[in-house]
Image (cartoon, rainbow over all chains, first blue to last red; front, side, top):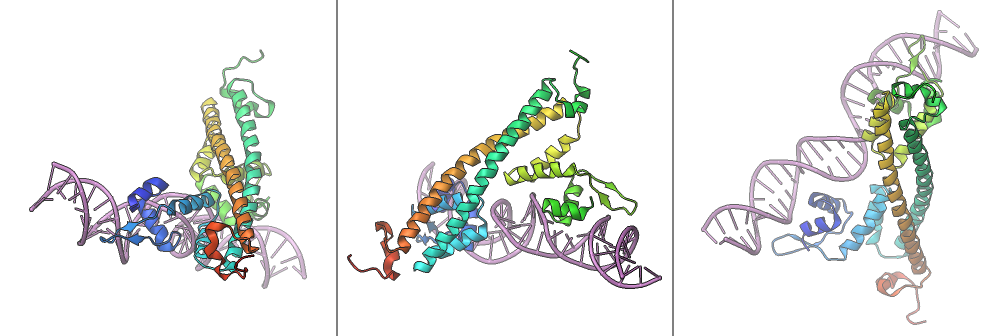
Length: 138
Length: 138
DNA sequence: GCTTGACCTGGAGTGCACTCCAGCACCTAG
DNA sequence: CTAGGTGCTGGAGTGCACTCCAGGTCAAGC
């Protein structure tokens, strides 16, 4: 697989892939006779995992550290990776709660706005009704 | 309330608060005789809501748009804000699913690492066991 | 009345994570 | 055999969201 195909499959740009390689986030692939990068399909698993970490807010610096640990043998590396994932797990769990709370808040606000739009204006926002063509008392 | 106190209460820096004011994210407060910003406690509600939007990934540009709409009267503004919140609600809901999936994935990985650490190495990762003092066949 | 600390302004600087570009090589189809 | 598409490198440029000055004003406590 050449870089263009990997870009398509991961949704990243070719430039981003080369950038990730430069900083050490993805391992350097083999090259063909013409010097072009040739990727093993196994890279996709790693890219998807990285994407998960990114999407859940793990900082680049941390992802980089994890990548670095990945090609270090020994239990110390395994242990540190486990600890990183455990820490991240806790962060994700608490984000989850925040997201759930925000979901409720958004639903309430949307509901409020809907009521304002339909002319059913709740008390503390009565000023907002100035421009609404609502009969004075019906 | 002066800016230092607001900074403490919101967890933002004084510089950030002034920056937010400059770009229009927070309304310009009154000034005292010495030209210092004096904030109404009501600002805290707005700051907390902004923080919610930020924490759930609403881009600065969008938060800015919302802030702008906030001091425009009329139903058009209410409608646009509602639509923004509805869109954001959907994004939050899908992030929620992603986070839940990632939580499971992290738990699996942590579990795997734990097993490696305890010497109970699963098959495809056997190379990692080289440095582990595990008896050859027990 | 003087020191100290919080505040003011305008503007420059920072770190992050890409993104773009010039100038070149290679390979395949027509 | 040549045109177009894809790839290469090193390095410059971008947008975002702050963050940090310098050089000054102001208010309250000792």
